[in-house]
Length: 367
Image (cartoon, rainbow, N blue to C red; front, top):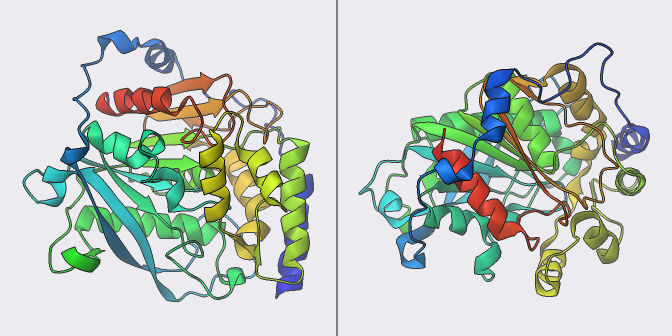
């Protein structure tokens, strides 16, 4: 199995998917989109006063089936078994206590090589994205995707990006129906139902979130952080090639052959302490995800690029993983872009993170 995975994954090292001839440039969605992009933050309501005492969190678990009903081709196939996928619900205290109904749940979908910790570094409050959103009244589900962190998988060849898309869809539906569980001290309580869901993804997580939104059309908004472009950099291609080589002999592969490579791929301005914390927490990538990456990127470039909900695209001007190119996304509603010129890919951990947090919170309030 591992040899097949490695051979398939090696294709990703040479992947540069062109924009189809005659296609509408991503992001050009008519006057409504342009108006949304030009909206001034001065017209938005003042943010709630941030108080950490108003924020609570709880571990949660979802029972999901590892199957693929997305447009992404996966070879070999996912194992088709049930798995417990874990995460953390981070919200205003009134939400978890049941005193206030949830209006929106933001599902935070991490990249290859990271994990749920990317959005919830609780020892670094300024850069704890989920908690900062909660201080502004938002509720977030911080996921560990299957094969990462608290959602272990024995064989990394038993899942793929198509299955990750389908499992994310299951998470969305379970949130609407309240079909998930508190873990630990709250295990005898009923978790909140979502009336609206927004997907927020970083890197490969952005690809997964976009494919879910395009395929199933069951969410109300989409935030893409450092999404893949039509022009990946040589550094990014080398990282995938290194993973492909590892997958010839194993079922998991590190993202970034060394700690220095990992830092180079993700960071430009992140404080040293955060880089150290990130390296200590990085997770290897399931080789099924590596092998299915070319198909996933082809799907969003040539197929599932159109969505009906509002989209916010966030990019760093110093992102080492892209050499320019377009983000393959078109929204039939509105599409807003924000760029942080000095930041790398890891936008939640770069020095511009507070500015980005404010921009996302304002955008969410306009949904």
